[in-house]
Length: 382
Image (tube, rainbow, N blue to C red; front, top):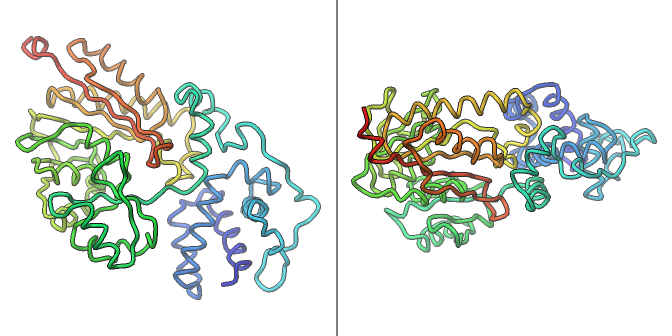
C-alpha cells in the first residue's frame, strides 16, 4: 500500500470506530477483509489509528471535524503530509475549503475531555499539562526480566542476538525499555524461553514496592492477564491468582510454566493471606496511551460505578488478611488517595503504611499503590 492508500484505509477504520466499533476488533476485521495488506501495512495502519485516537480532540479541530477523514487530515497537517490528499488512485479526496480546520486551544489542545479536566488538574497539580502532553504519544515498550533465571545485562545481550535493542530502567531493577525492533519480542528466544515478559515499568515498580519475600502467601485478587502475579512469583513467593472473570487468566498457566514459576488459580480464595494484592478495575487513565479509546469512552457515570466497585473490593479483601496492597493504573485522586482514605475511615483498625504514585513523566504508565495494614489490637477484637 502507498502512504496515501494507508491514509484512506485509516479513515475507513476510524469511521467504524467512531460509530462504536471496538478498536482491536475493527482493526482485525479490516485486515481479514483486505488480504492484500501485508504485515507492514497492518502495523502502519494500527499506528495511524492509535495516533489519531490518542489526539482525537485536537486532531478533530485541526482536521475540520470529528470523523475518520477529519482525524486523518489533522494527522497529515500535523506531519506536513496534507499533499497526499490528491484523490488519485487510492488516495483520499482533495481537501475542500470547508475543511480548513483551526488550531486547537486549551484543554482541547491537550486532548482532555472537558468534564474530566477539573479532576485531572486537581489530581496532577502542576504536572497536569506535562502529563497530558505525554499521553498524546505512544507508550514506550518495557520488558520485565525474570531475575530468578537471568540478569538484566545477560537478558539485554540475549535480546540483541535476536536484533532487539533494550536498555535498563534506572528506577526499577527488573525493567528494560525496548529501543529497537519491539515487534520482534514475542518471537524472540528470550521471550519464548520465559526470560523476559512484556510488562510496563510502573507495573513492575508497584510489585517492587510491596516488599514481598519467600515464605509469604500472597493472593493476587484482580489478576487479569497475570502480569503482577508472575512478577510476584518470580520473587520465589507462593502466589494464588483470582479474577472475577476467570477467562482473563486463561493464558496464565502457560506463561507461568514458560517462566519456570508456580502459580495457583483459585475460584474461591482461602484466607488468611500474608498479603492481598488488588489491581482493581479503574478508569485506566494512567494507561490511555495504550488504550486511547478508553479516554473518550469514560463518563461520569462509569467513573462513579468504578469507584463503588473499588470500595467493594477493598471491603471484601479486608477479610482476607492484614496486609492489603491497593493499586490502580489511574491518575485520578478519586480512585487513589480518596479511595484509600475512605477505606480507612470505614475500617478504623486499618492504617496506610505508604502510598505512592508513578507518573507517565517517568516513562511508564501512570500507577498508584498503597499498602494498608491492620493493627494487632484491631485484629484481636471479636
